[in-house]
Image (cartoon, rainbow, N blue to C red):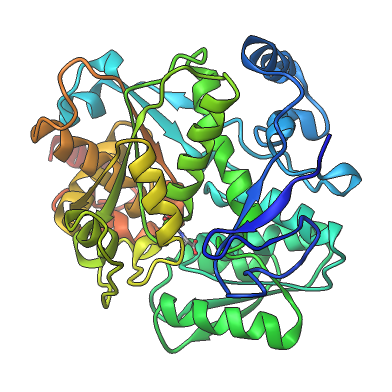
Length: 417
Ligand code: F0G
């Protein structure tokens, strides 16, 4: 069987899967992993993946490495928590608010990963690859979750980690994680887009391995969000998959996962992707409205700090994902994000603001009739409620604590009021 190769999406240059450069060495274009076809296809491949669901130990117990046949080769370098295996939830309260029937909406909660976001799925593959190529240190720029994930996986791998985050624009839980796991954490006086440019340059100058979603191995891991949700649905694809979009790594990964899943007979029909951006950080939505005639760059401003991104790096890959899946890109206001967050939180599920954008986007698309009555939707929540505790007291629906004296009648009074 042939090996995976890295292919430049811009100039077509091919490099070995062990080449450690994060971009094409000829034209600095984005790289993609081209995988050899898996040994089995269709029902046999599904059965292989399903057979691993009972695994309790080692990489096959991971919701990422369970799908090893459709990931790049990793051999003995695998570094896994394990991650993935996140729940697919039903909620009549959220479905009602969104405007769809209770059995038409499933919520894939990626906040249930080891560090509380979907980033762990990309990181297990990225850090595994870093070990494979003998990297001595790891780095990323981040709005917070990638930093938290990189910091944890680097600590497990016993490799030094460097993270660049925009000062004042990162949620408290994420900063706490990066620091606690021991990453060298730089608060950059600038926004995420500036952090990413710096990290890109620094990784080259300092010879550290870059683990932003520029890195195609990260995206390979993130494909498994889609594979796992398809598996949870008995390989019966939904009509729509709705996700929040910032730097567009996940949108690109979802598109690749669906394309491969169809090519290899895991599914016979491709769901439509809906990427949701915050109104104040919506360069991809602007391009979508112009039929992707050109990329846009904006100065971003949204309370959903995870997706406060104005110059998304995976733009060309994400355009392909939306085109290939007959997908759409939409926007939601910060108020709509906070309202969605309050609904998801009160339903006992909870998520961070960027994830709530997906719920708000699902509602918008349903109201506009883009998602049609009776269609089945999976909405992906990307990060855990506790990532951004400060956002809980913002918006129209804050549930404030009530201070009382240490007396029983005070409790009675508080319960009446
Ligand atoms: N949701 C959450 C919770 C995120 O942390 C991110 C991205 C996204 C959605 C958007 O995903 O960038 O692939 O389009 N967070 C990155 C970070 C940028 O640094 O943690 P995307």
